Amino acid sequence: MKHMKPVIIAHGGAGGVNHPLRRARGLIRACRIGYGMLMQGSSSLDAVEQAIMELEDVSIFNAGRGSSLNLEGVPEMDASIMTSDMKFGAVAVITDVRYPIQVARLVMEKTDHLVLGGKNAVRFARIMGIPKYNCVTQEKKRAWQWMRKKLRSAYFEKLPDLAEYYGTIGVVAIDRHGFITAGTSSGGITMRLPGRIGDTPSPGAGTYADKNGGVGATGHGEEILRHLLSFRAAQFMARAPAPIAGEKVIAFANKYKCRCGLIGIDKKGRIMCVNNTRAMSWCYIKNGRMHIFRW
Amino acid sequence: MKHMKPVIIAHGGAGGVNHPLRRARGLIRACRIGYGMLMQGSSSLDAVEQAIMELEDVSIFNAGRGSSLNLEGVPEMDASIMTSDMKFGAVAVITDVRYPIQVARLVMEKTDHLVLGGKNAVRFARIMGIPKYNCVTQEKKRAWQWMRKKLRSAYFEKLPDLAEYYGTIGVVAIDRHGFITAGTSSGGITMRLPGRIGDTPSPGAGTYADKNGGVGATGHGEEILRHLLSFRAAQFMARAPAPIAGEKVIAFANKYKCRCGLIGIDKKGRIMCVNNTRAMSWCYIKNGRMHIFRW
Image (cartoon, rainbow over all chains, first blue to last red; front, side):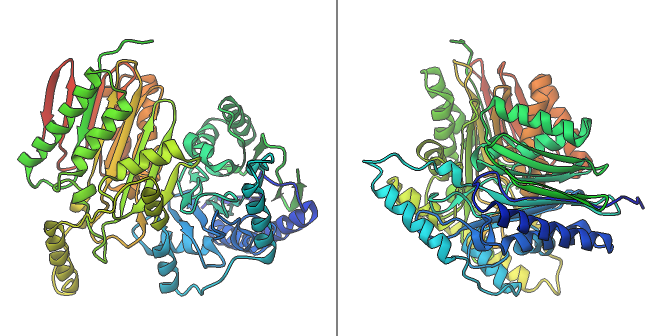
């Protein structure tokens, strides 16, 4: 039985620059709760799930209660979780649940499948006892109405850069047994087509973990998915410490003009935290000390 | 402009051993049609789409009209297509279309997204002019009813090995310009949970292509997805000819007890065709000569 010092890292997306203080506060709170659990002997799986649930509850993050709305004003959400023993669970375009990450974990632990999607994922959640919850906040509804107006007048005006409105939340942790978990929860891109599935529910794209480390990615989901960024980052971590692996994966992303940010922890507890977007907020706790960064 | 000799390869799944002759006939027909198009100057994208549509129409293959039914008797289908310039399109748990691969290509070419899922993928298909089509054949309905009976009496009898009932169809081709396309269409696992999304709509799992080659995988979707088998095969192809890359990826799959089969073509037109399942049927045409294999 290995005896590792627990580490936890969380990010709040690589998109918007709004609400920097509330972002920081949310990330600090989630990291503290997760780290507290790890120190008391919880598995990284429990700690990551709990930390993500905290972030899903903060409406400024694009996940759970803060999810962006699609073209029709519906928040279809993706979430996934993966552990260093290669277990994986995910939900795609799920609606009407408060904590998509909980359902992703249930898919991992209670079914023979890796991904459930659409209305049947919602039904699965109900069968598993997850209550119905409406994720649309007034804030998001107003933003959606404003955006819809913009789209309607797009013939005359310049369109807002929708790419600024993406983002995800993600947490990676290693527990005292060296067991690593990575989890991601995403509210998608504002004004996306209904039914759009992003990078989150694909292992190796938004979330990945194996014996070398765990990774969470955020940014332009389509590009992350196409280039399997999390998997590439984990492959780099197999041969180099996490910070160097981070440099390599960002160099790769730059080559393909893939706008993204990644967090990760390798098997020795070292931290990866890189981005090539205008802003990214993240926070980690290692050796009892917290580090916070936003932009 | 490169001038390559076109090559096309198709498989009919790594699962069932039933109807060997009809399987062979379907694969031969699909390969001939695709190869004919390639010889007349079509792109590999057009040839692969057409060859897959031919296979989706043959009800003994687990795709399109032959799709397996889920627990509720509904054929939810996945399909994906990827080209060597890293374009990707997919549909997940789509219903009521005759050729899911057509919709996957439309997602690739007509949207900013890579994957559409569920009822909204069906709506997208309708908007794009794809007519409604009921994929449930009498044959599949009877098989489903028989299986349901078995499941009901499962307390008393041994369950049939559901793993025997998986399978997919896939085609990879390289055209005279050296442009590679890989496509997969899947009818899923019999008696799967409604909403289950398999390996097909994830790039790098069921389908992958980049400048080094194109790959299609079939077998136990969950394991293929977890281990990103197609992507690993393409990575091996970057460093070795396709046949050797095939040996390496099967050695990897054996290590993780992942039951699968893979087909592929590397950038020089060499063939990969491997499996570790009891049966796999495939066919390819290279230099005008056809090779067929079935068990």
